[in-house]
Image (tube, rainbow, N blue to C red; front, side, top):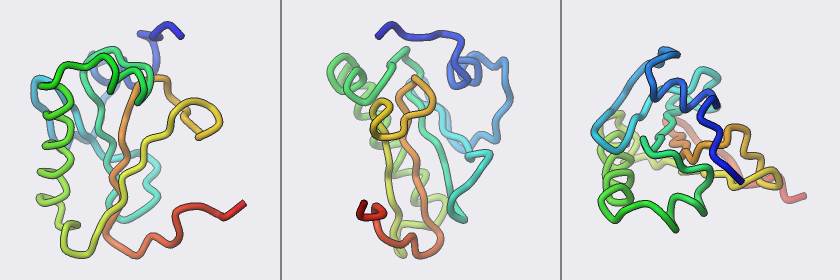
Length: 120
């Protein structure tokens, strides 16, 4: 699957669409989700053109992978969700519900989140 450089996250990374930024560095941009599913709902995007989690973890440099993990930890700490707990979600392709073809991680927290899946 070829990377679509016109997807909404690519446009946010390019500065064509605004976001409510929480964190940025040379490898990662994090911002508040516009349709939050929890009191804290932040999206983390690697700046590289990675279509999915599989693509990212197979192709990204060790520095990019480390930067993403550290960004998640830093933002969780900054937003006060470490003590109570938080959930990380990353969907891979259509069976998992990936809606935008740019790898991203959701951080959700700030309240009890319930079960992981519906059990269906």
